Amino acid sequence: MNCKLIFSMLFVAGLGVLRPLGASAQSLSAKEVVVFDNADSPVPYRIPAIAQTRRGTLLAACDYRISKMDVGWSSDEGLFQVNVVMRTSNDHGRTWSDSVCVARGDEHATERRRIAYGDPSLVADRTSDEVLLHCVAGNVGYQRATRRDPQHAVFFRSMDGGRTWDDGTDLTEMIHGLYDGKLPGSGEADGIFLTSGRIMQSRHVKVGKYYRLYIAHPLRQNGRDRIGTYVLFSDDFGRSWQVLGGAAQVPSTAQDESKVEELPNGDVLLSCRELMGGRKYNIYKYRNAREATGQWGQEVMPDNMTARQVNACNGGLLILRARKAATGKRVWLALQSVPLSARRDSVGFFYKEVPMGKGMSDTQNWKHGWRKGLRLTDRSSCYSTMVRMDDGRLAFLYERDGRNGGYDIVFQSLSVSEATKGAYRD
Image (cartoon, rainbow, N blue to C red; front, side):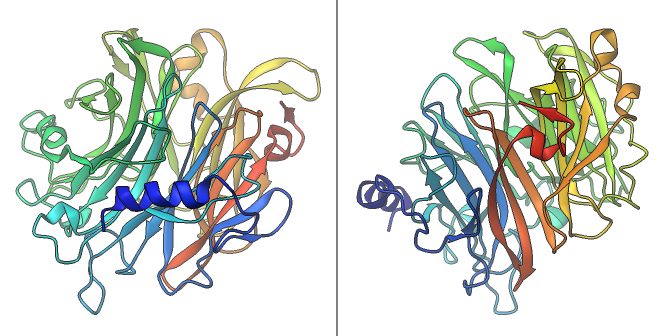
């Protein structure tokens, strides 16, 4: 049955009346809910994504791994299928709808991109009801993809705040074409993997109808140890994409999953999962933001975010207004979520006051000053993502309690004070 039709029917039947526990959500506290319960599911859940629409609805999505593997890899039984499922909340995460499929893989599809969809990333337009969902797709994994046999990049679109979704648009060829013959040393990209979690929408740069979108991705070439991580941008809400800064300059050598955030001055902050552990940061400083011209800086790794201290893991990045608790001074604050451990456990926060003035876009100022904040759990935990809700709190979605090839996907509503252990407040 068509996934869009199923979603529409379930919205009418169930999403209008949200259930405190839903079909499979286990309420843990007033601020925490297991949105996707891996413990009681024979099919594992992984890879959280979250967005809030302009009307206040939270959209939480993740992989439903029938194959029990990453997209592009098969189970022992030869299964490749992965679906993306979603639940919604209209009360800031206290209650959630039933789970519905928004991107359904098909084990027997003749069109290869339809075999599996996973690693979702989301953004809800701030001025309309349009929502964009990206999935990696197909039956070829990133690590063994080639230019002729790529892993696919498919974008699904909703025009009604996430109630219904189209059939998806495959932009694989467009995105790969951005790098053909333009990489350092020439050649083509074999593997491109657009990172899950949150697609970032600019607060400052608007070209035509939409505010600019950003998404980061690692890129690999067969026969080369490292290429690195790039950032794409879109001025038409994901219908077409360009490389920020061009393909000739590599923003980061990290070559793994990465997140993008916008500095208060409109420049672009890149946070990268280093392939061997730790995190690296770089900044794209605009000369002309509207024309997207500018220059990447020199990447840095903070002294307290090396492989000894931070696991090689996908995490969230957010910059927001806050008030310093000790003085009451209004500041911009950066929050980075990641395991506070060299292992996949102890997900929590680093935080840093954003430098002001000319130093804001100097990457050397991002090497120091990060402090550890709240540790949400000591248990096994992994990927995380977050947005700031319209009530000022953080909508935090993360993986916890790994088992059976998956994790519980847990939602937590947090204040800035909680995330920073009282150092800053809303």
